[in-house]
Amino acid sequence: MMRTQPLAAVAMVAVLALQPPSSSEPPPSSSASPAPTSSEPPPASSTGTTTTTPPPVSSSVPTPPPSTEPPASTTPAPPPPVPAPVAAGGREWTLTASRLELGGLNYVGVAEALVSGKLIKVLKFTAGDMKIKDLVQTAEISPGRKLVTAARPGSTSTVSPGRIELFTVQLKGNLDILGIKIPVDYTAASPPPLNVPFAAFTDVTVRNTDLIGGTLTIPGARIYVVSDQAPAERR
Picture 1 (cartoon, rainbow, N blue to C red):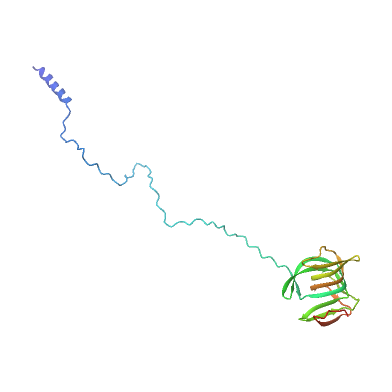
Picture 2: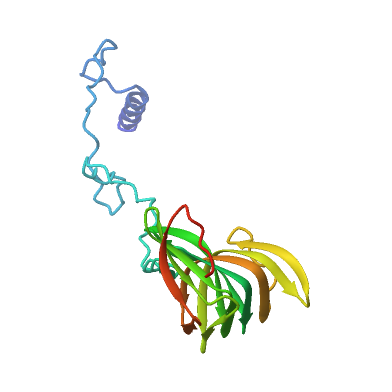
């Protein structure tokens, strides 16, 4: 009897161990409402991980775009061109001669002359000396009246010495080349085609605006006034 009791107790413990334990809590209900979710972001981890928080928004004032205009030049503007020299002039006068010789001649080119308050185109010549046979000069001194300066008939007037500047509106006559006479009519619109050191003209009429330099010598000069309608004549 003493051995059978311990065996019975061991068998009873084994049966109890094979049965599932009983729970006093009721089983969870399947109709239970889900747990509420939180709208707040999870707290930042304190384990040293870097967050991707966006940078703060800048001011609402827009930044103006960079200017597209080129920077102002620091180079100073060039000075205005110097105006071309203008002959003094003042009024037009006319020279007629049976022969005109120009030595040391140089045709400078077309220039401007001031005549009666207006700029006109003229031919500019320089010369070393001038010889004028049967000189007659006329110039208007007032409306309808001309001043005439005439040399003694057959005489030769001279302009010398030194550099002479002659501003000419028109030179018309016969160019005398070794006795061959060639009609010419030189103006600013039709200047001389060649520049020669000496030229002689016959039956010449020269309309000038100015003559600078040299000394004019007129043998037997006579000066008188005529009406505009009366032609100037040699006396």
